[in-house]
Each structure stands twice: as structure tokens, then as C-alpha cells.
Length: 202
Image (cartoon, rainbow, N blue to C red; front, side, top):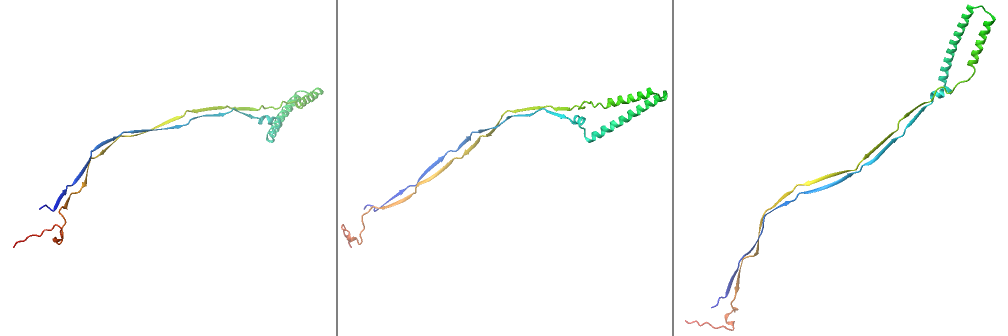
């Protein structure tokens, strides 16, 4: 009699994937930044300055009220001194001599000559010159060249370690396959076209 059942087993399938450990080194990098400071030319000039002070010169022509009063006071004082000296001189002459026609005539002539000398009206103006001063000129030149600035940015090298790895993948699960390989089963058995009765002997 042939077997009616066929039993087969499917083994498990496992896929293993490994990754090796590795050590990586990142190189150092260097960045350079360049900036520029612009210079320039700067020129400053100050011209000569002439200062003319005509205060005294104008006062000698048209004096101010204060200066006029001062000058008149000086003239009056000087005239008093001259009159005192004249009277003293004439008094001494009168003491030494007798009054006569010649002496009186001399006094009159001296008085006329003084009036002539003082009342001529000829004078040099202005009596005071203008005062002239000056400030020296200046010239300043400043030149500055352009400047280049270099900025280095350097990063150090770095080591990177990647550990190893093992990966398991189940591609086929284990299983048992049961397969019926016999013919059809009829119920009741007598319905089988190839049925042969079983001879049972007592």
C-alpha cells in the first residue's frame, strides 16, 4: 500500500550582512578673508593773514573825543609851562636893567615871533603810522596708503571612528509541508468506481 501523506520540511534561511569598522580623518581647512582699508590724500592750507591797525593813524587825523580831551589837556599844560618860563625870563631881564624902549620892543618882537611860529598851521598828518602785523601761512599735507587686512581661520583635523556592525535577516522561515498524495476518498466506500468488496471470512 502506497503512503497517502508526504511530509516535507523547509529549513530556515538567514542572511548575514557585516560592516567593517573604519576610522576616518577629516583634513584641516584654512579660510582666508581679505579686507581693505582705503587711505587717501588730505591737504589743509591756511593762507597768510595781514593785520593792519590804523587806530593811532586815524586818531592823529581825527582823534576821538577822549583822545582830543587828552591832547587839549597836554597842550594847555605845555602852554602854561611856556608862559611861566617866558614871564620868569622877562622878570629877570627887568630886574637887571632899566625899563626902556628897546626892552619893550624886544618883548613885543619875541611875542610876535612865537605867534608866527605857533600859528602857521603847517603840520604833517598822519603823525602815527599804521601798525602792520601778519600771521604766517600754513600748508599741511597728509597721505595715507591703503591697508590690506588678512584674517586666517584655520580648523584642526578631526578623527571619526565608525564601529563595525553585523546584521541578520531571516529570508525564509522554517515550516513543515504536509501533502496528501493518495487518491480520492469516497463515502461510503462502495461509491468508488474501483471499489472491491472486502471478503471477510468468518
